[in-house]
Image (cartoon, rainbow, N blue to C red):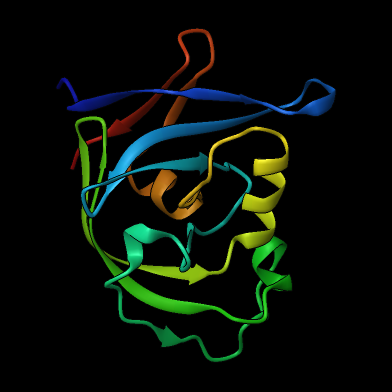
Length: 145
């Protein structure tokens, strides 16, 4: 059986010192945005200060900062629903996601001449859609369900 796979062009964001971050262009609630791809992040997280989320209603997360990794150091986590994320021809709808301020990341990116990010796609989304990162062809492959 042939799976329905979305092929999404990766952006390689060059960091000082020769490192790279993986990202994808997308539209969130109709607004052009950039999302980082982080295979080491257990959960996706989004920037509550981004214009794409201006109409989002939030609920505070109880026990903020009790996770592991990046989220463990965050004091203010919120839940909100993202109506539409279009990543090329791949579409996520009505996703309940975690939000926080990503000012520190976006300030760093600005100082490096990199684009502002709207969020980080982590393991929850990557696992759910059987993500494959094809570095040779610079593609993110996601299985449409």
